[in-house]
Image 1: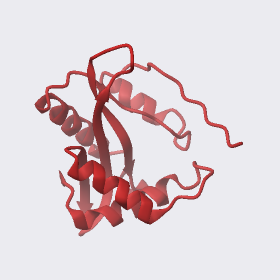
Image 2: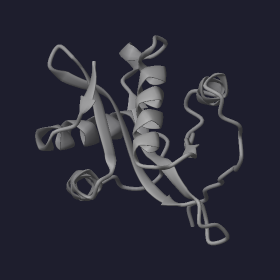
Image 3: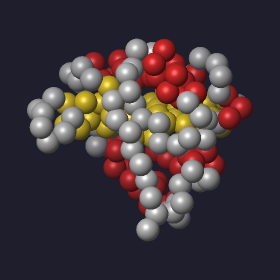
Length: 146
């Protein structure tokens, strides 16, 4: 069900992301800009995977490898965006994405995976999902429009 994304998946991924996240983000989401940014990740050895149902993209996980911070040389696999259509949540799909991302990280020689929960749309369900997968909370991010 999860597969490596193809170039023709970029726009459906972005449209699903906009559908999922638009109420959580107080700024204009530009589809063309997002498609271009996603293409740079895809063609720059990043992680871009999708799940399909009935020929439609119903979930995605996008990630990159980066330094864990200016204080460390350790590399981390960092989730950039992760979304699943509401009709496909609550099953095993999210965990399958996480396991696939972790396997990719290992294959890239990385031993730390960072997952984020940028929105409060689902309460603490996402945090609990990550904790069940062995993740520990390590940072809180606050956002303010000015």
